[in-house]
Image (cartoon, rainbow over all chains, first blue to last red; front, side):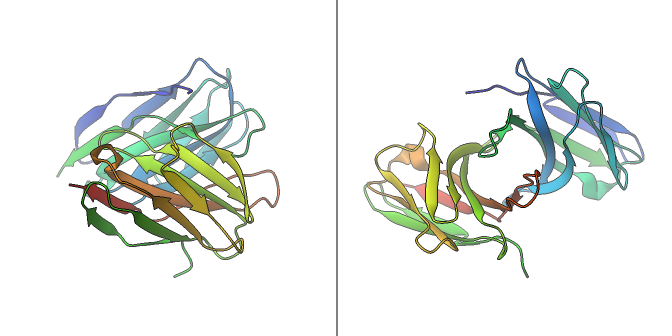
Length: 112
Length: 115
C-alpha cells in the first residue's frame, strides 16, 4: 500500500512552545486530513485540506497542503497540556473517495 | 450525541472464538468505513460501504472477516476463528457523499484482545 512518512515520531516540548510536524509521500494526494487521537479513543478530525498550497487554520492549529501535493504539515502554536496525544496525517489518492492512507503518527508530549 | 458509535468498546475473547462488532454511523452519512489499528501505527483501511453496498475490501480482510451493512445504516464486522494476530483496535468511520468533500469521522473504536 501507499506509505506516508510522518515525522517526527515523538516530541517533548514545554508548554507555550510552538510545534511543527509533517507528512510526506512519494505519491500525489488530492486530500489531506489531520487527526488527533487520545489513548483508547478514535481519531478526531482537526483540519481538512483539499487544494495544493491551501493553508487552513483551526484555532491554534494551522495546516498546509504542499504545492507538490506530496506533503502536508501541521503547526500548533502556544501549546497547552491538553494538546498531548498522537497526531495522524491521512492522505487520499486521486479521485478515490473510498479510503485514506494514514501516517504512523507523531506523539506529542507537553510539559507544564 | 450524533457522532459515530461503536459497540462494544472492549472485547476479550479466546483464540478460535467468533466475535462481532457493531458500528452506528452519523445518521445522514451514507458512507461507512472499517479500519484496523495496531499499537504504534495509524489506522489501516479494511473495507468501505456506500449505503448497503460493500464497494471495496482490503487484502487485509481475510476470509475470516466479514462485514455487512444490510439496510444502509448500521454495520457489523465479524471475525471468525479469531487468532492472536487479530488483537487490535477496530475503528469505524462515516462520511457523506454530498459535495466533493470526504471528511471521515471516527467512532471511539472497539479494542479486541485475543488470548
